[in-house]
Image 1 (cartoon, rainbow, N blue to C red):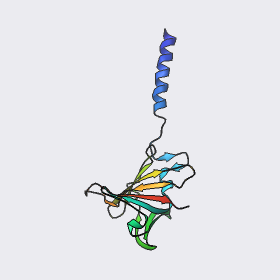
Image 2: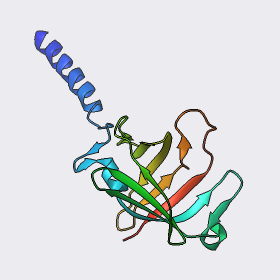
Image 3: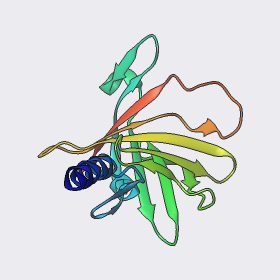
Length: 151
């Protein structure tokens, strides 16, 4: 009877531990998932509650360049002209969730932006982004920007 109880207890503990093995702390085997944001991204489409704009319907081209150089910097280029640069804050640090591949970035000067990384085998990575939103207050974002990784 004692052996059966010990075996049952061991199986229960193992099943509980197995359920906790999936990481959701923003880390992968290669490092933080924020590393997947680094690079050059081309705006592919914009989705609003009432319409979807693609290609020439947007009326402009846009590239997003995210680099690390003694800090993370995001530069936005519209029609090949720099229109803005945002700097990631380190406190608070980005909030990343490995399971959903989502990252919430807080920038200097009270802005935030939400990203969802969509990795595809043999295809460029896709990036779903919110608009730059006020960190405090403000309405919920209903516009989504979809970027495609530039290889």
